[in-house]
Length: 205
Ligand code: AMP
Image (cartoon, rainbow, N blue to C red; front, side, top):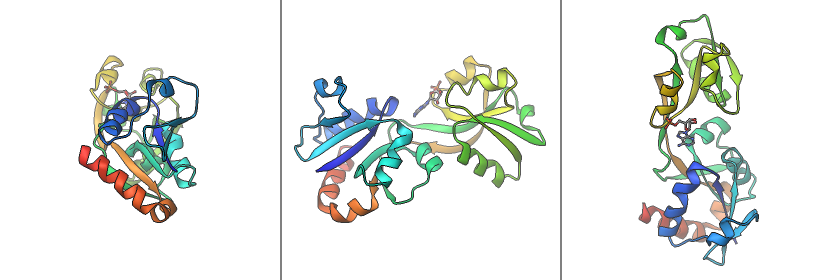
């Protein structure tokens, strides 16, 4: 049995059509049920749908053989014990620094609101910028407005959310898209099954 961990939300909407093209469908009844492990059209493949941040954890520990997750999550979490085998080119966006104006970034110690604590720390350390990271789980765009932070580090797609909250994208950190990752042990023990399945996906891109 091959277990695939999928990220809930925005990525899932774009992942399901891709999987279908590769010959793996999940019945609507399964998707709308409260089951946490879903059957698929392939008898030897099951799917779990979990929070994006949990996908690398499940794959690292071998609880899932394969995962589909954003590059942002991988960069933040680290890639121990898993291989990134395919860029799926979906859920594309940019990881950016944004603030109300460029001047706001001119601080001795820059206060940054983000959920990407490790990523942001690395980025500003590389620039020799002293910083204080304020971890938030959502609504990052609010932080500069209420004086909680000088800037934010977050994903930007259309830029509408930044604009609506009076923020300007100022520095580009990374191009982001969803990646297919494989548990290192599964890569060896289930090599034939994983290879044939990932090739199907690759051909349907
Ligand atoms: P937008 O207004 O289109 O720039 O979208 C920005 C909002 O959507 C922010 O709250 C982001 O965290 C979120 N977002 C944008 N792209 C993605 C993505 N590919 N995956 C997850 N969240 C995203």
